Picture (tube, rainbow, N blue to C red):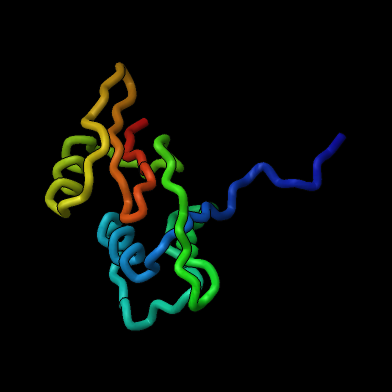
Length: 124
């Protein structure tokens, strides 16, 4: 049977407690310019390549969301140079959750965002 659902992820939602802090954190991680004065609840869309988007969701105005952090990565960001990416996140002062793990054709490390969500940075 042909499915009416397309085999494509459009948006990953990350639930956050402080939208401006999360916009700053993710924008700096990805080297994107941002204007915190223009950030308005409840959501902010981070610019991402290709089809998949990243939406930071702080929930309804006037309510502080208390998201539950996950110990496993929610998603990953790609890098061509794992060493440079690791050094960059350390330079930003981000919480390194795991050091670089290496396999024959794949390397990764994980970091935590301001709400404690684990994000993987990987090659391959």
